[in-house]
Length: 118
Image 1 (cartoon, rainbow, N blue to C red):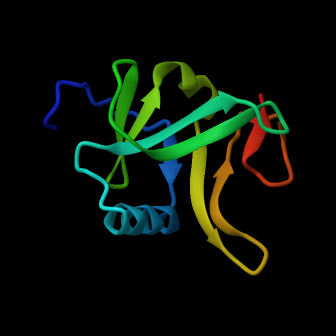
Image 2: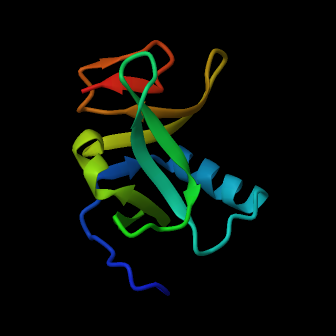
Image 3: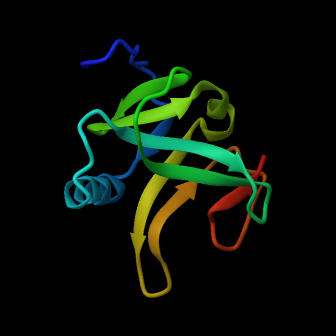
């Protein structure tokens, strides 16, 4: 790695092969700079209490950095409690197209699958 951030070896999340394919396609199509990673996190809001954050960003001081299936993943240390063990998948069907979040820490989820409570 070119920066001084420490990479953590234990992966808190998993990315399915379908998710990795779609992320690589997005990175190429949108010409995401090499110093960016996939930010995975949570924020307050959504119909169940928390919403997921998923997007490309530069590392910040309070991030842990992971390598998950060849994708550089950025996560604020405080978010790990909500995301540990989560699987991110890419779904493409008749009724739904997009990233889906299978979060074992969620005690309740909304119908759209993008917010949860813990």
